[in-house]
Image (cartoon, rainbow, N blue to C red):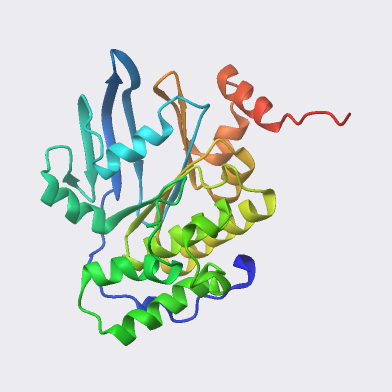
Length: 272
């Protein structure tokens, strides 16, 4: 189970990243704008994430939350503005340069984005083999630790098609960790999973931050999930960074759009 799995010597089992500490923000968006078919999705958006911090990106569907992650991964190019990873501008990088960034910044997609033809074990081993530098027994030891970390030992030899949505996301997290990133991006990790799985995924993200020092950006519409994880909040509304700051200030804000979001999030359908 995800809640009870320890993280003993995971750090020692992963390859060295060689990354140094940065004095400025780990991630920085400065005046970023992007439009699709003439419709502004993000407009002059600025925020930053410090090393070891968890930023939760909140907002209704269609406000550009996932677009921000894809810009950071280099899957999309902004129309204007600057995006930096540890002070390095990434908007002008070619594909080779972006591959180097993606070794440091990895993303856990909503659908898991696992390789259907590979077992859980081989999916998790894939980035270790891609990176190189490890003997096969080291790869297998690391894979076993990572699979244990996300509570998927019983699914190690299964294929993604046989896994539930929540289990796919847990395995995708294990595969992301195998690349030993410095930043992990989570795109709506609780969508289409039951509350128990959502709680376990939240606990895992918390432990990764506490024990391994990961920097995280979590896109979510789930305020309860954000309250467990967020150091700071970015609230997107009508394509703009409507609020950026500490979670308690967001919850206490009297802004009508923020209050409407919080009220709708807290609403539950009455029992018949």
